[in-house]
Amino acid sequence: MFRKIFVITVLVFMVSVFFALPVLSESLSGKVEVNSWWTAGGEAEGLNALIKIYESKYPDIEFINATVAGGAGTNAKAVFKTRMLGGDPPDTFQVHAGHELIDTWVIPGYMQPLTDIYESEGWTESMPQGVLDIVSYQGDYWSVPVNIHRSNVLWFNKSIFNKYNITPPRTFSEFFDVCDELKTKGVVPFVMGTKDGWEAAHVFESVLLGKLGTNDYNGLWTGGVKWSDPRVTDALETFAKIASYLNTDHSALTWDEAGQYLLKEKGAMMIMGDWTNGWFMSVGFEDYGWAPPPNNDGIFLALSDSFALPKGCKNQENVIAWLKVLGSKEGQYSFNKAKGSIPARTDIDISDYNDYLKSAAKDWQKDAISPSVVHGAAASEGWTTEYKDVITLFISKPDVSYAQKALVTAAEEYLEK
Ligand code: GAL
Image (cartoon, rainbow, N blue to C red):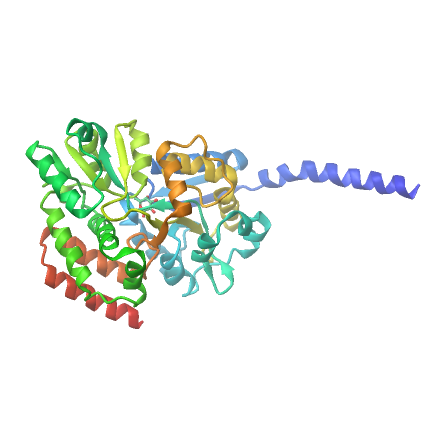
C-alpha cells in the first residue's frame, strides 16, 4: 500500500513538474532591453539569431533591441557609461570579457555576480578555463561570454592573388614584396577604414605581435617588457611603411566599408577581426582567403563578447533569461555561425560552420593565445584609449619617436595605477 502511494506521489510530482516548466518560462512578461553595437552585416544576423530563440521561449516579453552603431563599441560604450554612472542602468549591455568587464564595471561595484547561474547551467563544465578566467573576479563569475573572436586575420581577395600568382605573405619582407607588386598592377595593396578611431590600433596589434611574439607582446601590457624596446620602434617603422600602401580614403571609411575594396576587386588585403567573416557571409561574398598576418603564424589574438547583469537594472528576471539563452548550446551555435566567431563553449557541434570557422576553432586549440587590447581583453579602458589615440594619430602623421614616447608615458601612467 505504502509503495503504491509512493509511486503515485512521484508520478503526480513528475507530471506537474513537466507541465509547470514551460508555464514557468512562458510566465515571464514585461520587457527586456538588450544594448549592443551589433549593427553591421554578420553582427546583426548573429544578434537576430539570439533574439529569435529568446522570443520563441518568452513570447510575452517585449524585446527591445537597443543598438548604437559604430564598430568596436566606439559610440555605444559612451552611452552605456552615461547610463550606468547616471543611475539609469541598461538591463544588460555588450561588454568585452577581461579588463573591460572587470576593471570598468566589476571592481567599482556596478555588476551582480552570476556564479549561481553558472553552476545551475553547468557552464563551469562547458566553458574552458581560459574563458572562465576572463570573466572571473574574487571567486565569482561576472558575465556570460557568447563567443571567441580572433582579431589577427589577414583577409585577401582570392581572384587577385590567383591572377598575379601571389601566395599569402608570411613575413613582413614578403608582405612588402607583395605590396610592391600589387601597386604596379594598379590594385590597392592594403586596405583600412579608420573612421571610427580604433581600426589602425587594431591592425598595429598584429604588427606588434609579429615583432615581439606572444610572450613579449603580452609583457608590454603586464609590465614585463618596456615600450621603449627597440622592437616597438621597429613595429612603428613597419607600420609607417604599411601606411604608404593604404587606400587614400581610409579616414572616411568604417571597417566594413573598407571591406568593399576586396569585394570589388580593387583592394587585395586587409587585417581585421573575424567579424569580417560574418560580414562576408552576410553580403554573399565568397572570393576571400585568410592567413595569419606577417609573423603571426601560431598566434591567436583573442577577445570575447559577453553580457552582464548590472545592479539596479529594471527587468532582472528577463535579463537572466537572456543570459541563459546566450550561454546555451542552441544560442551559441546559432549566434556564432552567423557572427563569424567560434562558440565559447567547447561542446558545440560546428561541423556545418564555414571553412574559415573550422580553421579558427582548430587554431584556438593549438595556437599561443594573446589578449586583444582594442577589444578590451588586455588593458584597462583608460590605457586602451590612450594607445588607440596615439596609433590613430600615427596613421595620419607617422612620427615614430613621438608615438613611442607617448606609448611609454601611457604605460608608465597605467602600470603604476
Ligand atoms: C568588436 C566586437 C565584435 C565586433 C567588432 C566590430 O569589439 O567584439 O563583436 O562587433 O567589434 O564591431
